[in-house]
Structure formats: structure tokens, C-alpha cells
Length: 475
Image (cartoon, rainbow, N blue to C red; front, side, top):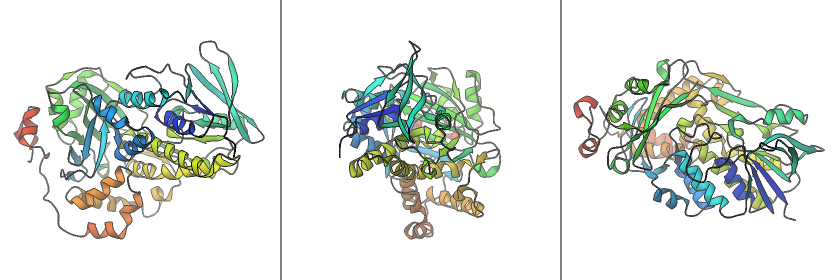
């Protein structure tokens, strides 16, 4: 089988550069098209609209990226990222109470999104196997006889457009993808789409953490109960590089998100517990408030289209976009790149490979899709357009009650917690929570006691000057 000549990837975000990296193993040349000028250090850029908010890279995604780019994890940790053990290094108020800090069974890497993007991108581009055309945008697709043969690329500085020929085009342009428009121009029918939109909005500030806190104090996560039929309010405080905390507050449709600096702490006070407000009250803010409202869950199903054109793939947020609060976007990008590599390695790139590969990619994004959509569809004022029977079936209410029951066990049973954490980290399939083994664990009856306050040790509270009487901490 001859080696295909040229792959073109649209977008240099996480999904795009990981796809480009694995394509370089199978194609003679790979070109990435990017509207932005890519920074040569960890800096924010316009093309990553969620980049200023809190992010985590779950262990499944971290392992996959490490396998593709050996040494990436060590480099991130060396630059100040934190390896957070779940649930040992996390203080979480769930919908059913405080989570016991059981010994870690999975982990996540925490740092700012610009640092993570820059390290991964630098590892890939420094190898010299991928070419990036910056300040360029795609205005359409070129096709011949039902097959995509390239992309129409316009130079943003010169204003000139020309067809860039390719054996494969990969859309990784993100939530703003114009794929639907491009396909209509080619006469391709509309792709099926599911949307679950709880109206999530985010507001973020970075603070100077107390000395030693980013290495020794746990991350904090306060969630809202979808079952109370009020707009949800959430907050996280994560340690990031540079001895800093990143604090992201969020809400669902119907609640007022803070947009000004003087509103940030008062909103934190309205969360289900004052822990985050107390942490931030005495530390120095380093940034203004940054907000965004692009948190809808959206999924396309190109694999269902009978007339899906050869020579075209869709990955990343162009294919499946998640509410970022669940931390699954980057891991899904890594999973898609890994399955792309597997598919090309096993069967090569034949004339009809796109449908086969796209179907495989759809399979690996299914678990993060259902985990996010199932949570968000139940929030008051959530708007959905979906035919997925797992979300709109007649037994939805029963499954929601079962989910609450699982949460009530997860926070007090280390074995149940380990399985749920494995699922949330995408290490095992979501179907594991329906296995006979897991169902038997749910009915053991041996539970740790309920916690009356956040599980913080005296030395941890002293590190950040917390008042035990106010937060009701438990050791």
C-alpha cells in the first residue's frame, strides 16, 4: 500500500495538533491551518475561548498524550503543573454531601490551559514533521466526485485564497466550525446533531496562593444540586503553576454570573458552602474577571450519514463539544488521536477509510458525551434537542434517581468511589456502572460516616488561614 501524500488539519488547538502528530506517522506531509499567530510561550490566544478558565487533564488523557509524546508529563510537572490524586487531593461538596478523601485511584494534571497547550504543541512542532500555516483561514472544501480533495485556504494578511490539495482533511476548528456550511456547498445532507444546553456560563480570576498552598493544599470543588430545580451554581479553586490559584465560578441558565471584580466574591458566597469564598477573601487577585458562555454540550453524528464524503474527518469540539466543568474535552481529543493512529496502523488509509475511522472516533467520544449530557439535561431551564434514548427515554427519571443513589454511595464507600472515579477519568467505560460487580458493591452496606463539613486537616487549614468555626471542617 502506497503512503498517502498529504493531510491537512484545520485548527491548531489540542485536538488539531494531536491529530497532526499521529497523521505525520502515516502521511508524507501534514499541514495545519490556523487563524491565530501561535504564541511561543504559555500565553492566551483568541482561538481557545475557554482557555482562561480552570482545566484539568484526566489520567486517561494524560496517559494517552504521554504515550504519543514521551516526557510530556514530566515537562509539565517541571513547569509547575500539579498531579492531583482523586479523591485524596480534592475537597468536594457533591449534590449528596461531602466526599470522603479516599486514597487516590486516578489522577488529573492541573495547570493553566496555555501552559498545557504550549507544552504539547511545542513537543509536536519541534519534531519538524508538521508544517503550520498561521494567519490563514479555511473558507470551504474542495471536492471531486463525492470525495474531499483539499481545503480552500485564505491568507489573512495577503487576502488571497487558493485550494490546498490533500488526501485527507481533518476539521478541528472547534465550536465555531463551519462544517455544516461547507458540506451544504458540496451538496451533502445535514449531519444529525444532538444539543444539551444548560446555559452554562463561567467567570474566572487567578489569585496569588498562600506560600506552599499550591503544593500542599487540596483542590476545592463545590457543585450544585440539579434536583432542587433552581439554577445551578458551582465553583472550583485549582492550584496552577507559579504558586497561583485559578478560581472559576459558574452557573446555569437563570442565575446571574459575576462580570465585575466586585461581584466575584459575593457570588462565591452564594455557593452551597462558603469554603471558596473564605479561601479567596484574603488572597491577592492577579487578573480581572474573565467570562464566557460557550458551555453547551453538542454532538454531531457524521458516521450516520450515508453520503459522508471520503477524505474528510471531524474531531475535537467540531465533533463533540462538552460543558468544560467535567474536564473531558482534552482527554477526548487524545482518545480521538489515539484511535486515529490505531485505525491507520491497522488498516491503512484507503479510498473509503474516512467512514470507518469516523465511526471509530464516534465510539471513543460516546462515554464523555453521555456523562456530560446526562448531568446537564436535568438542570432547570436546560434546553435540549436530542434523540438519544439514554437522555430522553421513558425511564429517564428512574436513571436520575439511580445516579443520585450512586453519588450517595460514592462519597462514603471507597470501592464504589474507585469505580466511579475510573469512569469519570475515562479509564474504564461508562457501562462499568451497570456491571454485576458494581451493582453488588452498591449494596454492601459498609459506609464511612457522613461528613458535616469539608474534610480538611488542621495543618491544611492553618496553611491558608481558614477559620474552623466558620467552615465547619472535619479532620
